[in-house]
Amino acid sequence: MKPVRCIVLVLLMALAGPLAAAGLDDYKPLRLPEAARAATGTDRVTVMFLGVATLLFDDGETALMIDGYLTRPPFAQFKAMQPDDALIKKHLARAGVGKLAAVAAVHSHFDHALDSPRVAQFTGAMLLGSESTANIGRGQGLVESQIRVVKNGDSLPYGKFNITFLTSAHLPAQFGLGQITEPLKFPAPGEAMKLGEAFSILIENQGRRYLIQGSAGFTGSELAGHKADVVFLGAGGLGATTASYQGRYWDAIVKTVGARRVVPIHWDNFYLPLDVDLVPSPGFDKSMDALIALGKRDGVEIRLPVEWQWTEPTLGLK
Ligand SMILES: [Zn+2]
Image (cartoon, rainbow, N blue to C red):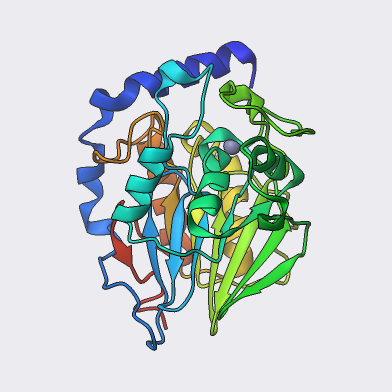
């Protein structure tokens, strides 16, 4: 994306709140149902959505988080972003997070990785991600013993969970490509949090398989040979792409893994806070139209997550 177009998009997102507020009500029948949080000793995995691609997984014994983006600074702070420790602690407490085994960043853009190191610090988790994500952690003072740089194909066990990282791609032509090559000092401008590496993340737990695709990009071959029951599918920017791109993205991710349920993520305006109802970003309806049509074609359910609610994403799948 050219810088000017990017700025226009960023501004649109900053202004979108009141304009798009009613959008989600149209999708009430497609909501992922609320479920009780997995308790110790029960063979269940529950997931809580916390905006963008932040997802909390819990099987009653072990909990993991994807991204952990909780500060959500307003657009006015784009030039000088930093984690808000009090807010992060407040949100972790509301989500019922005590100890986390790991926090894994899908890539290093601010709307994914800004707070991941702090979440690791506050929960004892290992920070998992690219070298760029590690450098966000180092810049925030996270100790090296809590940082693990992962590479394509790395698969790590945490309790009954197994988490696998596969090199994928970001939505094309976005801002902030490149690597963060040294510890990043904060506050930092949003664009300083460069992409690093974009991962598809597979989470398995006793036969249940979840794929997290944090950004609407693909290489086409990243998931060959892998299966998943549920895909948490990045929809950010998807509405602005062509029908051909949407179809190829769907095929590369959802069709390849043979998923039977898709949970769109990364559809909210991430300049707005988590204490109020999420507001869809511009293009949300177009993304949903495309996903609903593709789901219908292939017999795949589309289910929207509701922030702060525990859900059991594989429930009802045969
Ligand atoms: Zn990104």
